[in-house]
Image (cartoon, rainbow, N blue to C red):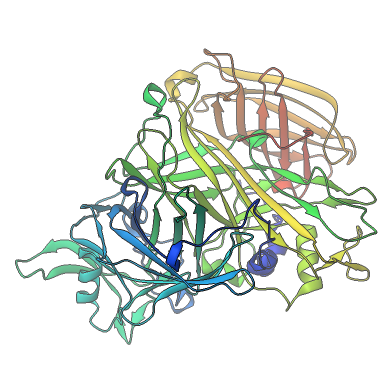
Length: 624
């Protein structure tokens, strides 16, 4: 049976790439306690911290021959089970040359005298693809010098243009099998990418440097008329390698380096087991997984800063791990919708760009001192171009240097903001940056946690009134800002043998949702689904409608981090098909229930939240 509902993205995807466009506006500036001091003679040379410095790639080897997928090639037909990943630790030095500041802005140039050298490693995909990577070097561009501008009072770096030449066996072979490929320097951020450079004052008067960058380089479906080919690791004595046609393939080079000492406590016996060259699925714990913002708008009619502006998310997290090298393991993270969520794909040209639905969020009330907004149809969609990659320190479980996750976010308020400001906003997804880690759960299961933030300026934005129409809008005055958050917590499902025979049950009567609707529910669901049945009923009293489960489609039982029950499971995610009392169509329920004493939580969405959407309110954003 296939559900016929239309998810929120049906009306949002046509504008989705632009929905969070104002994320590209200049970030809100925060003055440092003390301005940064430039080094003596305006020049410094510092060695890289090899443990926390690396260069890598996520090479997406695809088969997307149709013209509609050109030039980006983001169709879903990825070969070898997923992108081929590698990270190589770097040794070398970074030289920064500053120019005399003008109004606290100092221009600077970045070079790498003597070049950077990478350790030997393996470029590997989950299935059948493995390419040895030796003699890895990073050189400065021979034409343009990498440069940027540093605000000494805020620490903000703007106009950063970083260019390097990267040599490794795969890139060399890629050029050999595509003789018309015009290879050159990698430019960060490039057309679709990011850069993040942070200066930190040192006691010796110099400035430590921490740098992150990624770019997206599509190969399209042909190179000057010749089919795109990807080299295979089968080479002759003259390094003439075999190859396959791979139209729509792309590379995602990234680099992270720092001159700072990095020290995290070893996790020891608490380190999770990381399955290398494997993809794992982690159900999201909705109670601890949120997207939202705090709006500080200079608008008199709103009366000040918003409160409770966050939506809990239902969905899953796919993690692909690469090959360990130098004590770290590369990985890629992707957000996907709840298990067994079925819907007719929305009619959208953006589907050709690989943009598909991700986690769906609960409705909520965004409260200002003088006004309240009803926020509906929240959905989070990963950026298909700037994919989320990082490196795990195997001894600590921490993601080296932090983690960047780029996502589009859509809901009714943001769509109205887009309509009111169309043509005046740059095109970008949100760039959530923060700490991330892989931990061991209560029973040894893998746990992924991420706390990402993004801050930016909303001065001059036209902001709608609570009726969300273009008839009346406020103008955000000077100093208006938005602080966006993304909190993720995913916990691995235990082996089926550990959940055999376990049934989770419970109920709630006349519960008040965070959106102000009252609801009742009762459930009895087996944790191990094959051959089992269960019951679930949900009534939304405000809508006077009842959902009755007919078929159970997917179930996962996990143990919350706060759990004290070592021999039981206290969090359940399930997807069920059933009927809605107000029509004769089939419908779909996705449910997340936390039973941890003192941490109870329930989230119920019908048809991805479009038909009905309730969850129990929390007074503040929980930690992931």
